[in-house]
Amino acid sequence: MAKKRWSDLSDGEKTAILVVGSVQVALAATAWVDLARRPRELVRGPKPLWAAAIAVNFVGPISYFTVGRRRSAL
Image (tube, rainbow, N blue to C red; front, side, top):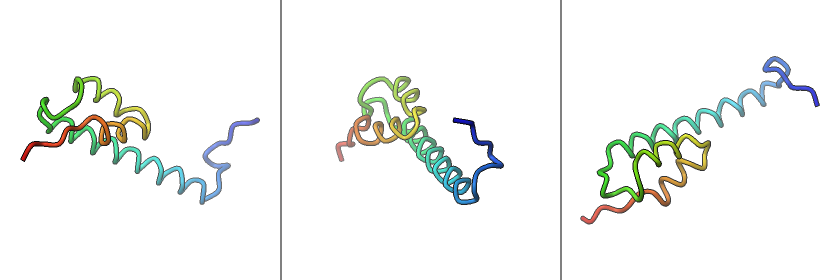
């Protein structure tokens, strides 16, 4: 199977790649900002480990938001 170049892709394919990439970057950035601002006591596990995990496609940020955060006791 030959590799496709960017110029070989249709406009729809290019748009889809850009949208998915933008969502992924925005999700990761939001997770990193939340992790940086959240006190250590409200994070399950070591913060450096979560910072690295967030870099893993969609899996990292979604895991951080669903498993890595503790609710604050208000």
